[in-house]
Length: 493
Image (cartoon, helix red, strand yellow):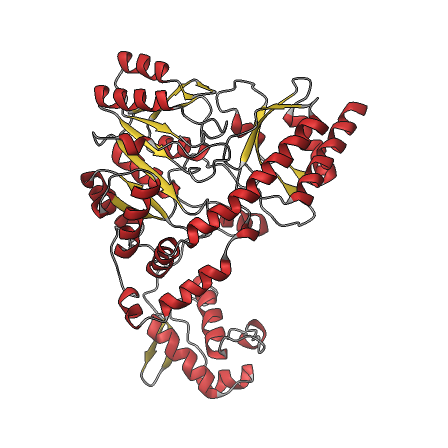
């Protein structure tokens, strides 16, 4: 007789019922062949006495095992481990093998290109460099919460709790039409709008619809790493062109078009990621003309449109597109806070229809209540008020950061003051390396992060992108001081 009394353990502090704890342990004994098929289980009274539980616990356990098919009840004979259970083929496991099974599958699968990693913020004493994100402490969370509560208190809220449209909430689409036509100079209707969960979804959907294996997409010789990874995942070929102070080189793009068929050009027009330069007006028009002439798409990722400190934003390429060549992607995530996954894809109706259909395969719909909240947030003017507020703050932070970077660390960094955005493209003195700095920086609780991702073409430009928007004045001084200590240590060595 199997020693149930010493083999079964109950956790009486656990919220799980005793009969389920017993059921799960008996199932494990059956799976590991300790209890073989046709093994007779003790009667309910006998097992209850052995385990010091109520008989009803044993009866409930056996009923559960019977329902799941692990045991069978034979009248006048008792309860037995089911006779037809196949033997579960498995190797004998030691601790090392068990650990390995937690990390590795027993089958093959496709492995995706790695997206740029974000530094985990776990230790508040450590400062983490970022490549330009908004300061969550400035998020108008009270206004958004009030709007969300107001949306949820409406009588028709229950209409939005079931399945909706893969195009996104109609109210938000209507609001975005008015907002983008006014602020971006677009000429769109609701049929041209697909709501996404941020810019990355827009990039992915565009990639899936545009590219087949070995199709060519043109990107900068420095570029947004997540976009590169998304295109490579679709097995497209990346052709890189020069990026200078005026943005992507349209001359290089034209030369490429003369030699081979290209499918699309990816551009971050405000402001190029990572170097922060703005694509100039002349190149915008030339790029549109090339797209018409050579029949390629322009994926315009306008993630940074709202943050311009020296002048008003230059209207996006999409505002000048009369030929349906531009797929315009943006979001409110960057403007308000990354946690609010509200973005948009703007394109011709036929492209939006297909993108909506494709979106349904991976994401049946968006968050209708959140989308309604942001429709109200935009329509009420709260978004514009928030932008005006943080623009002043980010400009002050940019000015302070760049001043200190020049005055205190001018021997180590060269840079141009960015006209907009949330980051500075910094070139390190060639006598130093980011590899060395990243190691020494940890001694001063500064995490540089994956500095290598900025040199995808192995140009050895010794540059990285440093975000300033997320630091307040005190933190900017602290960041500069930590850099000074790092360079002092390196120089003494």
